[in-house]
Image 1: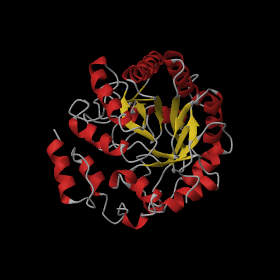
Image 2: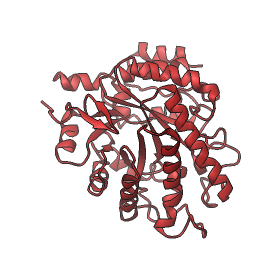
Image 3: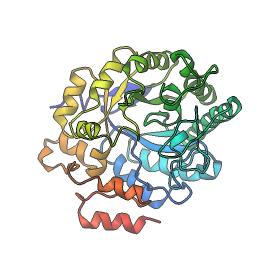
Image 4: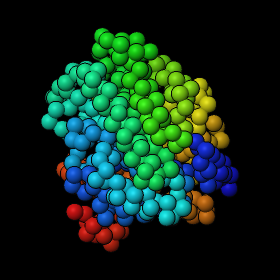
Length: 371
């Protein structure tokens, strides 16, 4: 049963026991100032014990506070967090999973007083300042430093966050990159900074897998679409990324009625992954409400992706992989699309996310660990 889903494969020279990955998911579980908290460790203990082969820790900033989404965004920009990151890695690997750290700069979506971006484009009533080339070089080096820190902490791989409309994606998008220098205009020029970041990171970490969270379509009329993202994916593949983790949408499109409706469908981003996979020679991960084993198996069997990523699906029920493998799918606790996004509402209030589907004792345990 589900012979594709539970078959092994290799990513960046690292063997995975199956084709299930935990996709990165921000939950506000880090401590104040971005520290590795007891709550974060408990969360990743549950995730890594789930049976998913690859666990990706979300959204560790390379530049605090300017590049942090919030004060509870995990930090990878300083050696002060190295011990915490090492404990986090040990928690994940202690349960037999492969540990990956996603590193990011939020750009125009940062919570800082002085956000930065490729260009001065209004962002929910705030306008970031356009990066100078010297500032870009500094950020590039900070990505490389953070990646090396992940390697020193003992993670198995690192992922560059080029999704959700964050800084690397902002350079690719014709909507947010309106530069007239060598980093703006044509697709070739808009690709330049993310490719320079990848090159700098790979140079710094050596023989260490570097994946990429990949924005295939912003789902905005004037935004990035497959016509331009597919050639960019091909360039990333040629430049040696270990994998592409494909997604769609940004903070400016997630709330649009048609996108909200789309996101309630199972496997709603698999078609994007399938299009990207046609032109690359590296493994492709897809995510997006892959709620059943049948959907996961079909995506793999149809060649839309090589690995399925579970975000909220795994968070709501960490036993999903085991229940699917053992034929107990009727016991799975599912994310309820009718709950009005309680988890997201809590995050917007600066509180840790919890799921209304959880039993009361689990929610209480979470609240006790929150600091």
